Image (cartoon, rainbow, N blue to C red):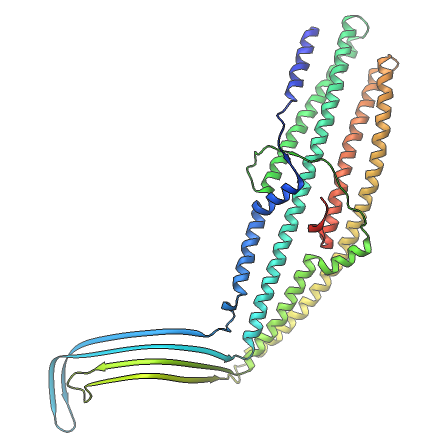
Length: 439
């Protein structure tokens, strides 16, 4: 292959690396878009709205009921009536008419306190639904930044690989020049060509992986999966994180613990609801009634009309229902005990997870520092190797090894940077502080 053909290939490949500048998706913009569009968050918000409706005073049983009824009837009969007095009345087409209307209000004065505990339970269920929504938001935000930082990591890896291709392309041209002028062997040129091809393949695979992860992030954001963008590759780590303080926050603010506490409270309300079956129920009703009736000739009364208020009270006391209420009370107490055990288990698991997350976080910070030093060392080593290569003091294989060492160090440092940040966010989620984190 002639020299100009090599140059043409490199020019075409270099041109393929130039892309239009995509709009920057900042971290804050990503959060805002996810909170507005993420499907799981939108469903969770709908569940909270439904729970708020259920916890309303209109669903409590505390308000009175107001009803209105009305009716009318009209009948035509052929009557043949004989009275004990001996009178006999026969009428064909006898007409009877009746009209009635009523407006009434009813109120349960006392229902054994079941209404009180049921209403409290509905409000506690609303609080639980809010916590479930918060958990969905936390999980969505964490997944969002895992993908966001993965896009950032791959973006930097693609850039590093692009620099590697640039180095390999210049090396290939030098080997080609040297071979045509008799300064290098054909083996040197072929090795350079193989290295350039391998770097090109790696670059294309990395770029494809980056595009795939970008689409994954678009799904989390709830927007068109093919939306083009770039991300902010800077990282900010939080200062002043202390294990004891985080553990204390976790016991107070961790969403799983808070949910278990709400479930326990609801179980306790169940005892009160079931115990209400042992007490009487008292209800009042007031109504204003209207009745008007027109009778046929067979009736001793030609017409009757009534209009006026009606007051009534009813008392119901199920003194013994065969033991069903007693059984429900016993089972509700067992449920409370089980939920208390579940809460203890949740806290113990949280302590374990917090200790594990703290260890992972500390290890990630150490690896980050070590990889940073390793990158600096490999950068200096490559710079010296590059100078020696220009002077012809090292072999092509030694140069390639230094080049790969630098690339691996860059990739490992990128991985360490974002692994440390995601470990930090996972720790903050467990402590209940994720939504206040610095991204």
